[in-house]
Length: 316
Ligand SMILES: [Zn+2]
Image (cartoon, rainbow, N blue to C red; front, side, top):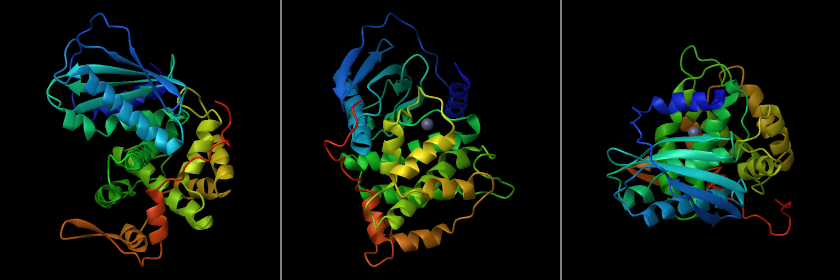
């Protein structure tokens, strides 16, 4: 276990108690091909209520979502280790880049196929595969990309609607705002600032890049370039290296500029005004869109990431 894994474990522990796992002889992994990658899936506990095929479909679905966002699965080879737990639902996902790229995740014995279909956690873990491991003080960027990209990736394969995602962002993004006494993202490591502060950074970067390029590029262009340059979870990078590569592929400046504003010191964001500019709101419990809002085109483009131009991809 390394430092970054220890932190991830700690954050996952905060979500609830870890159930004891019964070790057993594990069958050889099932190998899936998705997005140009080989994903080895192992079932590390003795029983699940749902059929194994349903679990494999769940892995395929998450892999397809991440492939849609990044234009290909972000690493050539990965392992997904599935453990059985008590209760219902998916929990305790952690990702790691030591000894290959892999994640482990727990599926409650009472989990249904519908639970798997609506799961976000495995997609979140696979988004982690796509970004380099950065020094601990920048952990917000690892969790921020995973938190922000996961639902957008699922929209690309029809697993969520844009309205659902905007509704969740309207509800949850405020958790990323600095509270009294908070410092910059590099210095305040609370759960809210790590996950949602990082996601807010990503949303602002996505908007900034789209504004600066008349919607020709988005955050996905920056994140794809970082990934293609070898920035994957098994690589240790300084954050600035990732941002320099991302900026070069996008609009030349937004990631580093935003980092300059949010890294060291807290930056307040007027979220109600941001939602107004994007033209997203809530009326009678439903998400409504304003097509005349100044950033309506940016809003729509965020949920419709650009396809990868075939033939221009570097060899993997
Ligand atoms: Zn995470």
